[in-house]
Length: 97
Image 1 (cartoon, helix red, strand yellow):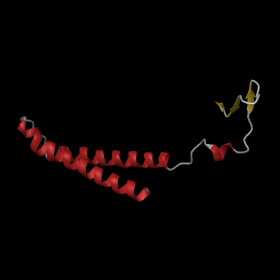
Image 2: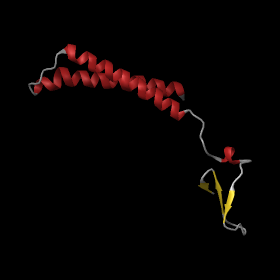
Image 3: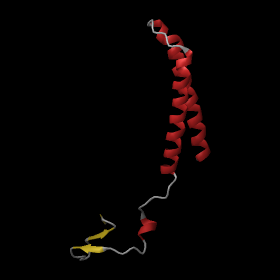
Image 4: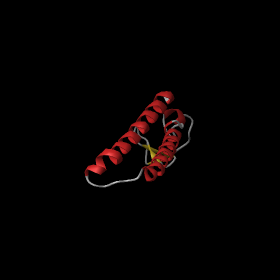
């Protein structure tokens, strides 16, 4: 899963850079807008840095342990909200169950 996500991230970033390059080199000149290559290189570097940053932050969130769920609830203490007769609500960690 992690390796597949990494490969997709690399391929999509390369594709984004190629599209950016094509727009600047062929698309914008059609509209008489000319961007020098020396100005394009820092933009592409910033784009790669941003892509790496978002990949790392996204991976951190995707692969962290879920804060809630049934395995975490076993053995947890809560307070009843109303009567449990035979159904009712229990408040655990600020959530009603």
